[in-house]
Length: 82
Picture: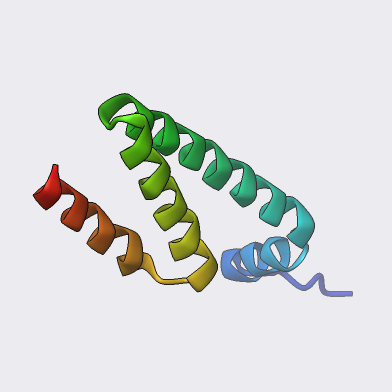
């Protein structure tokens, strides 16, 4: 019998297909949440409480609306006013 050899790409593809999707989602969510917490702490550090609350709402609104530019636009507007 002849043993069939597999290419490196086939091996990598097989590994990729066996990934646990829930683990990947959990890992990405953990990273995103940690980054968001750090961002909120930075906002609270650099802006007064009223402006920080507005920016926090704008950030959450941008995430819900899946609009990356929404928060950036509001931040630019706040910088003009600040």
